[in-house]
Image: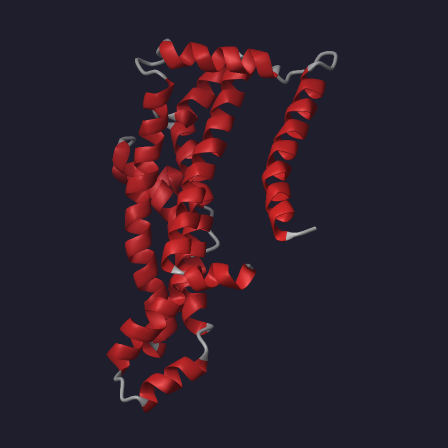
Length: 259
């Protein structure tokens, strides 16, 4: 099979995969006493909430509300997470001071922080953004730290031979070489961020995708729940695709290795 046929096959496979998923969905939803809505019922519910507001907002508004919370939290998670990861990986003194505290707090699930966050910050936007931040922060720190530690020592040695000082080695050698690991951490954090925002909205929110899931649960509207689940998956997939394209621009050598 030549390269052109191989590329065509890679375009066909996703279509086949989605087709199998839909067929399995139809089969499961048509079973006797099935609690799974049919694809048609789900599509009709999607069209309905695109025009008929729930809690004074149609579906795109609910998506934007959740997405805005994720993006705001993501911005702070990237800035602080990359900074902390670089500090842990680059400075032994900083690592000795901060790492024990980080390792103690890291295993705590973001959802476990929800009661305290609500007590400290109330039930407004700030509390939801902080919960998403906690969920997104840890993967970025870990990947950045791993990227720093896994840099080829020959690169650092070459920089020293050429007369680079410690600051130049960090900014011109270490950080550029760590970009693939950082982007991988951001992609991992993306799914965690969505999980946390949905959890936060399911507990205290008047709008958002998580709020809609709770509304569907309370009313027994499984089609609404499935629509929201699919929306979360599609939005996450689009954001992940954007990050993959960004990685291709910033780290073209990573993709050349796989060709």
